Length: 334
Image 1 (cartoon, rainbow, N blue to C red):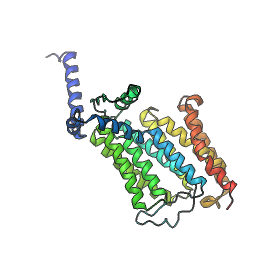
Image 2: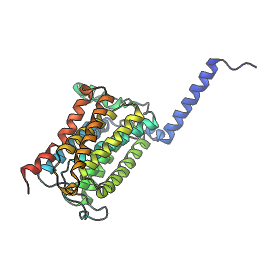
Image 3: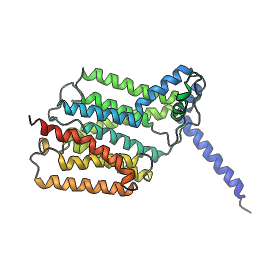
Image 4: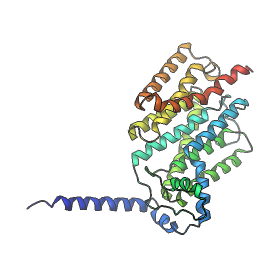
């Protein structure tokens, strides 16, 4: 008895892959996306294209960097709030707010690792180009709705949840409840825009929001209990998660950029941080050892990432992030 010809085996294999993808889409809310596709009014597509930009990696990182600099420079350092009340946690000493950037980069790195771990495709649907869209903006809109890469979990959902959630928890404007409400609305709006634009299944954004909330809860727990200062803890965690993302993805996506940014910030902070706060009583050798380790990791990231020319900008940005936290205490000893 002869085995079936190769063409038959190939056809059977492709059919199995097709059924697997269709089943995967069903579990991720493909039927909901199908029902929405083609029925979304043009004005809603345009609105979604604008709102979705609030979840872009460049946008959330830029917003958090600027906010952390403002909080640090004004001397109103972000403080950790107790999850149950609006009061400041008992062990939360004042600290420069640049640690917020490490928290966000860590969340994005964790999302990248999971994307490549699951390796689930995006929807094959493409949102229509609104006729009312100005010609000059057509290319920008098309690039927004024709993305490549994997779809689960949604990076925009994770980034918006972590960034706006962290800012809501760490600032003191208004009440904690009102800040969290605003952050929740922003994260939900960004997440829903991904479904409206047909670049994610509903299941992708649900997973992204849950990942973001779970990550924030875990990080807040760690920051309140870490023996190191918050900036060191946040950037070290971000670097560790980025290295995991590099290993899982084969240095694909933005994993190397996240690692370089975290390593750059951690290196400068380890060498130049003020000797006060939680680490004021630490042995002097501790600072030299941590700085040496951070520098070695930065060099390793540069080597893995293809050299200084490709990795340097992200590492320089990470170094720039912590500069206000380094010079602010020297300008105002009080």
